[in-house]
Image 1 (tube, rainbow, N blue to C red):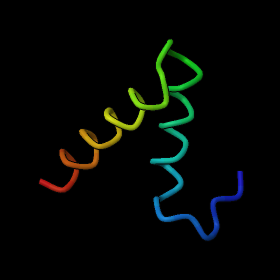
Image 2: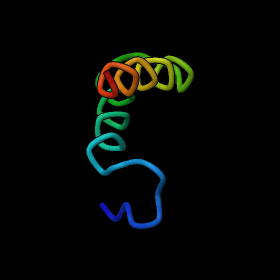
Image 3: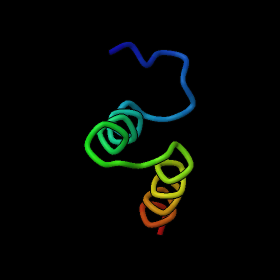
Image 4: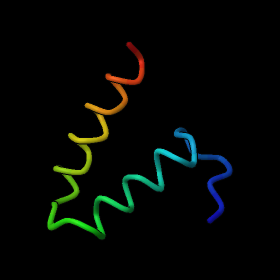
Length: 43
C-alpha cells in the first residue's frame, strides 16, 4: 500500500482500513475512533 503524500502515518491509515473492514461501522464511526486514538497517542 502506497501512503506517500498522505497526512497520516501508514499505521494510522491501515488501522482505519482494518476497522472499516472488520467491524460494521460507518465512515463517521471510523473517523471518531481514529480521533480518539490520535488524542490518546498525543498524551
